[in-house]
Amino acid sequence: MKLASLSEKKQILKSNKKVLDEGTLKKSLVAKKVISSKAWEELVSEAHAKKQNVASLLIDKKIVEEEKLSQITAGFLDVQYVDLKDIAQIPKEVLFLVPEPIARRYGVIAFAKEKDKLNLAMIDPDDLQTREAIKKKTDLQVAPFLTSKSSLEWGLKQYHTSLEAEFAKIISRQEKDDKKEPKNVTQKLQEMAEEIPVVRVVDTLLEYAIFEKASDIHIEPQEKEVMVRYRIDGVLHDVMTLPKVIQPALIARIKVISNLKIDEHRLPQDGRFKIEKDNYKISFRISVIPIFDGEKVVMRLLDESARAMTLEELGFIARNYETIMRNVKKPHGALLVTGPTGSGKSTTLYTIISLLNTKGVNISTIEDPIEYRVMGVNQMQVNPKIGLTFAMGLRALLRQDPNIIMIGEIRDAETAEEAVHAALTGHIVLSTLHTNNAAGALPRLLDIGVEPYLIASTINAVVGQRLTRQVCQECKEEYHVDEEFEESLKQQYNIESLLGILKREKVVETKIKSLADLTFYKGRGCDKCGSTGYKGRMGIYEVLEVSPAIQDLILKHAPTSQIQDKAIEQGMILMWQDGFIKSIQGKTTIEEVLRVSKE
Image 1 (cartoon, helix red, strand yellow):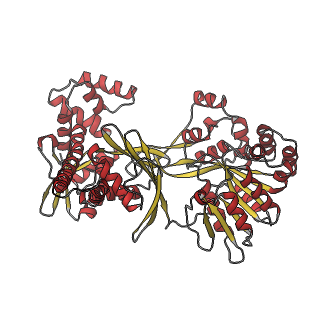
Image 2 (cartoon, rainbow, N blue to C red):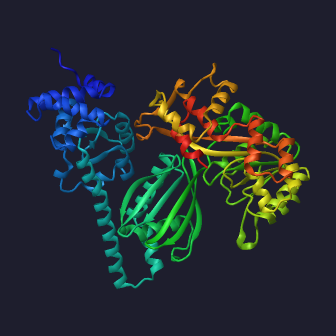
Image 3 (cartoon, rainbow, N blue to C red):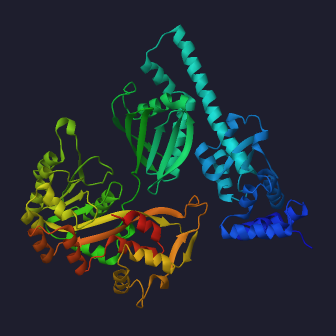
């Protein structure tokens, strides 16, 4: 019998991991008398019933130790096995060749270096993409070793230990220097912020956040440690835990690069800085606030090198796209975008501005803060400290002969009045409003204090939106919903109206009787998406066009529900319906639509 080559074995593992889990594994364990054939079959049945991996069930039931199982797997893959617990101390210059966030995310630890070869402990030695990325980053040949999860966890703790030791040395040196020449607190923090370990930690945090396309970095002091989390595709993920001793130097370093007061610990502070490389240009917006255990830092990442997207790329379907284009081409009037914080309202407005940004028009904005720079657009930053509010800025802009005005947000009666009067006097006005849906924007303006006749005659359209995570296209797979799930959906949503819209919008060719007849998609989870099943985000929308019938309802002070019913009657697609259309098209999942569209 011909023995499988290493590449063939790896292909077997990659294409069908059950070959290893339930075939080869059984033979190995039965041959070693670790388990009987009968007990194995019972274990497989239990694993399938629990939808659990057979290997993990073996460990849970303590039939075989995790280390022993990893050694058997290593033998099958023809790679060496390493138990990092056997290594007393990984040299820090080797350990830090792979930054901690990458080590955690991809399950790898650099534990030894021999000339131009780097020994890499891996949970999955078959992960060629990670190996290649580390090879490029370190400029070393990577030798993969298989390790267990408990061994990897032990290795990850060494980042904490090494950093703690380095910072203890810095503090010790500072104290010795201080005895020779006493320094004030500000001077000490300034010097600590310039130390190489501190600079390296902050650079790693920023670099990895850019690599992961994170929108925010959260640095959160706890009682005994400092937590670092990234918001990726709208969801916060734990990235690393740092020793408490690093906290003062870490915060000081961020304050230094953000031009903030290094010795101010009691008041909130805001700052900015920018990182420019050949392939990206990222602006960081910094917020520091005092909390019980120290100072919390949140850094917002804004990609200034990103090209302007089109409405189609944002996720507007044909009907909604046509409604928006019809209304922004009107000579005057207002278009409002509504939704909670972080729902992509600003991105939608910037996209509309990029469509309208031609040489023949003057576009001016008043924002808080200016998130993206747009060539050819006059952008003004709100500054309440000196009295420059939205209302005051808007009055000044109206004296600048604008054609199109963008107001970052309508927050109060004064701004709302100025905005509707601008729309009434021949300007196109774009702005955002915090309401749950599109129809709710019109009664909200009434609540603020705007006269009904002004709302009815100036608002052209309202966009309601949310952001959903997109299905990872690398591991996307089809599935069908069952009757039980459909029944639970019917208690919250009008599924019959959805099925009618699917036919009307030509999403399906024939009339569908139930959701069970449709194909939906979900991500299985892979290396590309960090095993989440999602990669990237897109919007789901509802676009309400203010027709004569809706104008009458506004004048009558009609409630949100009545305005929404009339808009639906006139063809408006609700946000959740738009989400279901996209889930059928394989762009997002039903679970995501349900998560973000609940009011």
